[in-house]
Image (cartoon, rainbow, N blue to C red; front, top):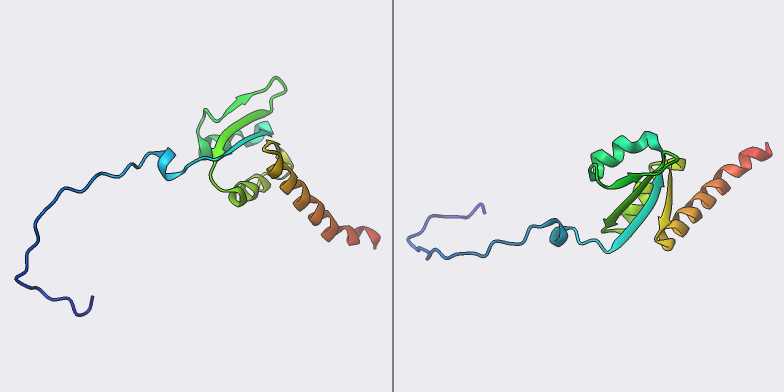
Length: 114
């Protein structure tokens, strides 16, 4: 751009189509997640997904339901809740979190031997 210059050349204006910027188009779901959350993290669910992303169970836990676009981001997000979140579906995400928890336990297990 440092060599840009004004010229006598002109361009004909034309209409450009307006892109579909709906959430479904920009953030296609694909991963339907169901998880139980502790009541004290309700504020985060509301802040991050809105007030209609969960239903409250009789025991006070929150049944979260949403579409997620990226497996790795979903796992990372769930892990930020620690033991205050339990993934119910999909099974592969639940298993991924279990494997991470097992690997984490192994890292800290040697402290128990001392």
